Amino acid sequence: MDINSAAEQGEGLQERQGFVRAGAMLVCLQGQDETGLYGKIVNRNLEDAVSFHGIDELILYLDEICDWIGLPQRTAELRFMNSQLQQKFREQQDNHPKVSESGRIGGVELETYVETLRAQEVVKVNIDYRQNASMQGTVCGKITEEQHVAFRSALELMHMFRMISL
Image (cartoon, rainbow, N blue to C red; front, top):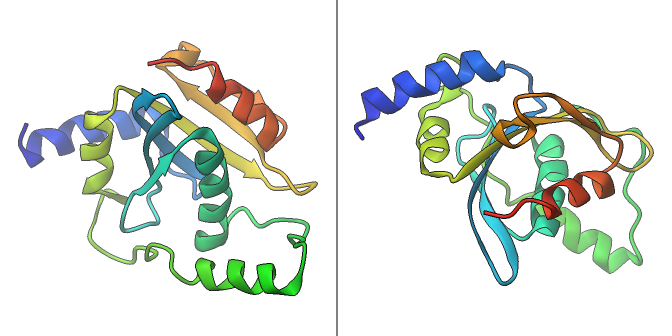
């Protein structure tokens, strides 16, 4: 498939899924192996998709992407077991994908379209709040029969993704 037809299909996806909020992420599930689901997370504010392997990485990256783009903001600071681990976390945070300032097509990177076309399943995750040291929002996609299903915590979101099999 060429880039132009990918962009055309992506425009339809953008309209269907209302991919406009900063906390909206497309989880492009590319497969599953003995260690779990793997794929890429796409956010319109990042220049590059973020690869994940396993539900734990998926959930942690969803939270970190919110930090990288600055929305939605967390209501509580993270806690760490000691100051060295806190420092290590801060250093890792500095090595995240760049926040996009240009090169978008309709406000969304062209890579978004390509990643969704490569995926076996695409789940839109809207993170509306980050309260009580967790995330709250909705998931929507073919797997939810296009219904928005709310999650009240990162743990609940993990349970939802755990039930997916490709």
